[in-house]
Length: 298
Image (cartoon, rainbow, N blue to C red; front, top):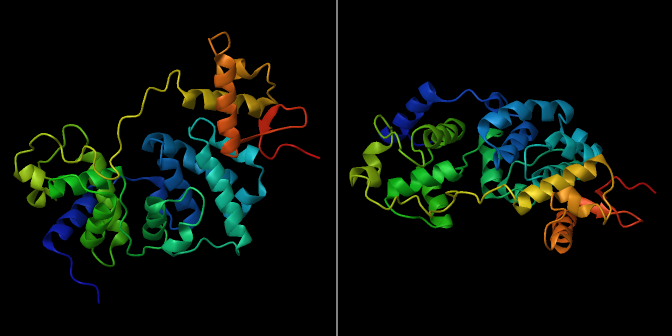
């Protein structure tokens, strides 16, 4: 039988019962729907993901539907969410699942074999779709773990701490609760420690919150992203959107990425195009124009 939860674990679970956010993907245990949510949330804010998750699933309700669709259609539905490589990986994962019988596996090793599925996403599918005992460590959990320990943690150390902290048989509620605790209370700036169910065991709080914050630079804790305006990420998005409207020629490449007339725009634009080709998002047609992968017909 699973061990009885500790007092601290009970405090966290009770806090989660009363404070848990009502997010749409928390109402399903369908592995594909959970996977789509977790991939979407990798680089997309929760409020934005809430708007797009249902529409994506309405168009691609299963791995079979996603695998059967052209990549261009998947990218079209993903448009505006950023980091389109995630959509490409979802498409490749759907194809792989269908080639292996059409069932998303319920073990860590098999999930990690799919493109774009790392340790967090794999464990999230296990915990949230299959309700297995799997401790997830994202930026919110990484921050809680480091502050609770009172020091920066390495990746393996953070995962080990999360595994040891997990109450057996309560993986879904526990992980969702800690995700919300990190998002709502143990925030990067001005954490709301009063009433936190973990405060009694939080070394950083007990020591009076000394600088530096132990979460800074700790495993899984995200850092501020570089400026988007004028970045390669912005240029990649522009070029991909242009290619979704039709083939992009070499002469139109700089304009497509938004760098027409800028110094050295030709070579830099070509680098952007080459990066999208390497990611499997674009390819060259017979005339050398850039098109969305999979749209060339013979």
